[in-house]
Image (cartoon, rainbow, N blue to C red; front, side, top):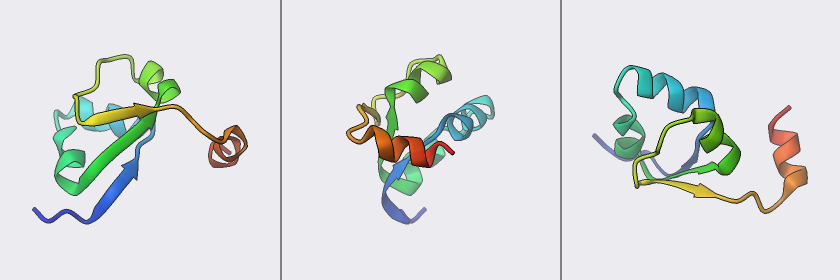
Length: 68
């Protein structure tokens, strides 16, 4: 499978749905880097594989715009 993008920032629904069908690895096969936030990690409620990186939000205002 070819990697289409270098980076993806994932939200909870994507992670939960892929996890439920045991296909979380699809993100790893499509992207070089997978990032999410602490808030998403807590909402997901399970430990992420090592290749999913949890990062702090640097711009709270930008996060608010994206969450609308």
